[in-house]
Image 1: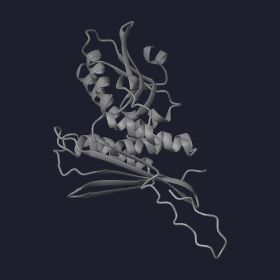
Image 2 (image 1 turned 90 degrees about the vertical axis):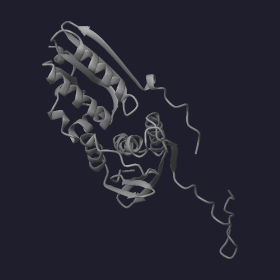
Image 3 (image 1 turned 30 degrees about the vertical axis):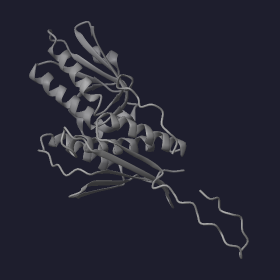
Image 4 (image 1 turned 180 degrees about the vertical axis):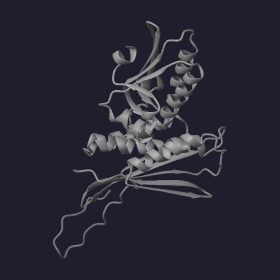
Length: 124
Length: 152
């Protein structure tokens, strides 16, 4: 077996960036959400939901390349937290990405979440 | 490994080379960072074999769930053990399948606090793979999965 390249570093595996856009907080996620990187997304969503204001929190998954059940659990929990705080959690899912669509549809979680096909419609 | 010698019918053939235990292998500590190492190795292995991308990602996703289960549940938090992943590409009449095993040596049975998410992981494996077998013993657990046949 050939040797592998160096393991990907966690900050290369996933980047999470939060920014205010109007009254919304947009949490932009890029890369792979798994058991190692999931906690970072969890923390960013908790922080966004804790921010003062009543505008929506938009989780933009359109640049996510891997989503395991860990990530699905993070989204479910964030959705619950949003309900508790009477905030709106909106999830942007690129319908052309089976890596994200598959796990959300197979677990039925796509029906639980408010999903949008792109960021513009989520911010609208 | 010895090269098989060319031969005519009446000449002896050298012993066939010993095959490696699997086409792809990983033996890693059962810590969160290992999940991405396994995914990367599987992608490289299946990529090299020219596996169709969607079928490849289904295998990667399913194996990741089994590996994540080991990382989360097989060992006590202070003493992570090992997770071993072996894979074989098997050619059948209807195409090629990947057979992958994920094994741990854990005997620790944690409280089922995250039942819902454990269910999701199992559900994903079940949906993505043609066959799924989970073999718990008192010396550890093996998950054996067989992907649907993918065209050449």
